[in-house]
Image 1 (spheres, rainbow over the protein chains, first blue to last red):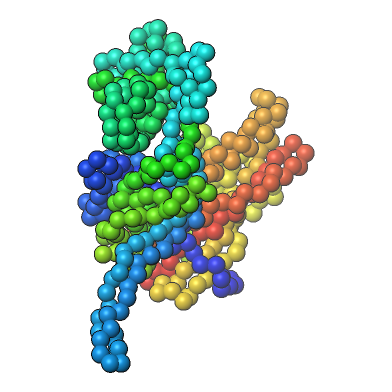
Image 2 (cartoon, one colour):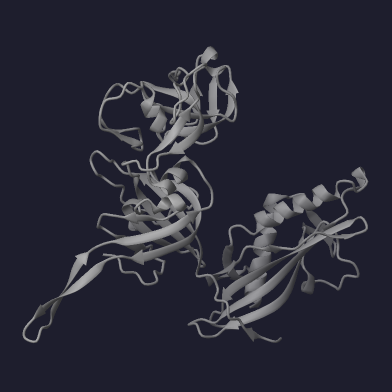
Length: 302
Length: 161
């Protein structure tokens, strides 16, 4: 049997999967990932509140930390080395688009285009919307119970947004992921549903309500939440609201070992994500770890 | 290397039995899942239809690693004439079904490496893993549609191999 050398190396980690968890923007609290306790999860069933963003490609990591020397003596010689800034960048491409991946890729405020009311005046971010309907008790993350007349307003294949009415509050709005920061009170009662991430595709409609193709991010509809149909999405160029999220990347090793890169708070890199992908972590607290059986190449986490 | 080849075949065979239990073949008097290794059977004058046939081809070795890694090229051939009940007019659908079964069989892209010369098979230390398949075009020979897919199967050589 002839044996030959092969130049192409075997895939040590053949693909990377990304996960999202919401940051509590008001309290500035990210979601931490503990690889010691959570590292053994099935890639198809991440632990709550992590949400899969699917497999990604072109994943690269670039440290942006800078160090400088403290000089002393004549002539000056290096006495100590100090860290000036702490920063790291990763970039990647999503392989599929969802509300989440679009919003994270664009980096800025991402809005839902609510289905317009009949005869509504056109507006850049969506005209006046149809009246929202209220889920009934007993609804779940995947099944929305509605009055028969309300259910008849939806069809399979529709995307819905479910969140509370806007009542004039300021600050971060939208649950469970903040979708916008309101500086001044608005008059649009549907505004939170225009920015909410609590959206889902309707897979089935019957006289008692809607069946959703995937669970709502927010889980069981809270009291006071209402839903409306969405006709599309739009992001704002030049908006001052930046998406901030907890990111987790898992490189699937060839021997079944997971390699983790966790970025508790991550945000878009100067809007360059609008061209498709990158984002940058702004805060410190880099965590890079591996599960017990994993091997991390060039690990330099702090 | 043989352990990796055996493990790859057995992984695909057990996955196929789950994905489509009805895809079976009668071979040497026994009904088995519809997948076989060409080099482990008597030579065929004509490859059987509606069965996946594994044909081992190229081999590469990387000896610069702590454990020697081998890359073995496996060609998976399959062909169909469709079913008699439809007069063969469903041969395109039948091939599509085999395409889907092949893709499903190959995921996930790794399986534990076992030594099948022992009874029961002995678990080894590493896993066998492979790339996504490179699927070739459909070849048409009269009423017979066939396709081949190539997969590179990687494994580490362990002590005693």
